[in-house]
Length: 117
Image (cartoon, rainbow, N blue to C red; front, top):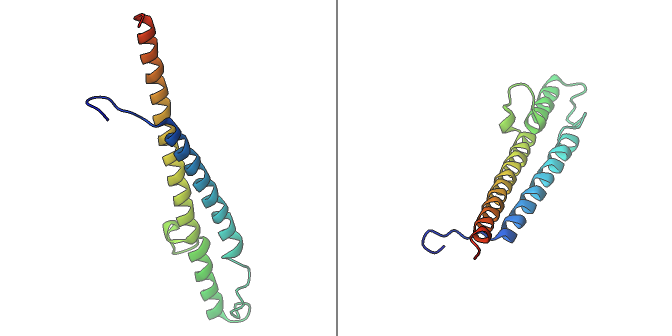
């Protein structure tokens, strides 16, 4: 940056957009995998015949994918979903920055061309 001039590396913004997109996609895949793998129907704790084991299994399940008494942000699935949303929001910010940069660049080019420079 020199004086009042701001320089943007367009290619770097494109790489950031792609990286955020990939991260959001990875978090979505992990979130879906967590639903499948972290909350099986049977943990093998004896939950089919012991009430205490059933309660423990339900607590494990709730902590993994959500359930009674566990806030979403305190679950494995909730944490992965939060990371997915954050990556998507970062991507949107980079995309908006790139769009404003491109708009301003086009406007500046039109002014320079209109001035006959």
